[in-house]
Image 1 (cartoon, rainbow, N blue to C red):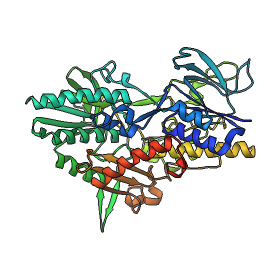
Image 2: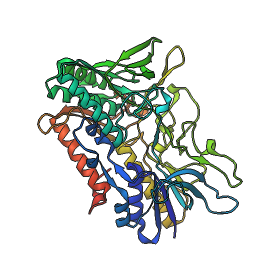
Image 3: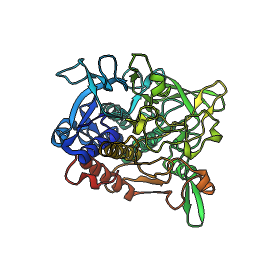
Image 4: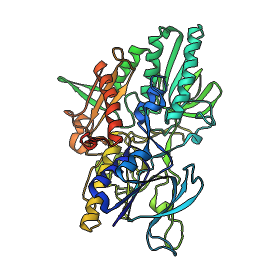
Length: 487
């Protein structure tokens, strides 16, 4: 019997665990370690953040699902990896600290034959002084509790507007190296939509502040859409939407500090600016989970296993090179660690070899560089690929990952909400292939297949996003034929 340990129960880890159990059955053991007791459909947190959904609509408890599927669930935080074991144990193991109320604080070593690191990101609010809802002055929609808190603050904005008090609302990225600009974009337009529905838009100024070099970049270098015989860039597409909704945009910006009512930011041209606000939702940058690694002698090998960002090194080309020299071939295909072949890193947990959007630097050295997004559809695909490779390795006794899926080959679809409502909602439906541009194949169309890279906005997009909410919760609960729903 082989034991597979999955660290993390988000989109990627949960997907991996379900497929591992489906393929391996009772002959092998699957253990999931996660500090959270509930699964969260994160894309719908933006609707929680404006009060259109409750926390209960975007989460469900993991334990009953894992019990039903006969997967061993440990509510605990992984703190260290010993990929060679140690003096007391010849088997590799992970050390975990329980967050389960019945065992809180207890330390346990869990041995493994295969390990999937799907820990996701650490929300690094500390990178910007004054950022975040816990120890700062801004709201967030990164977690259900954060989104619920944001909804309360936003409700106060609505009350102030109803009282005739003008409000300035700022939504965007809270650091120069943030990712997930799409979530900030969605929340900005949902906020704008709600205020418009209240017929109070004339009293509110909505401002979007971002580290993107231009609107429509989204951390993927922008996109190019085919419209009949002409081409339309995602920048022009987004600029049109911002103009239509009267949302002011500040691009090429790195938020450096937040004080009560004031956002301080540096722009690419070196200017240092301030922006007053009544309500602000700013996303934090991500870094890897605080995992350490040790060899058999107990020596720290964290820097060998993980990149400086804290994300796991996989089968990517991490050779230092100028941005202009990177290639689509640099990106990982199997998500297998090159040193320890029984360890995989999937979703946000793997270290990307380079940025997709060109990194830029202000004259004072402030980095304004969107990090590569690795969420949603790609995360689910990676979890499935790693699971299938591990299944083949267990069944056939080899150490070669058999399933490949580079982000420079796979496509992704994103439905970005721009306001909810059965008859009044809208969403921007964006598809691109590949996620990482391949200029050797598609140089004349921005590095992507023009036939598979599209953008449309409308009410139908909103219905699709709402349908996906229901479908993916169904899939994550592992109800009958869950595996028929694609990642």
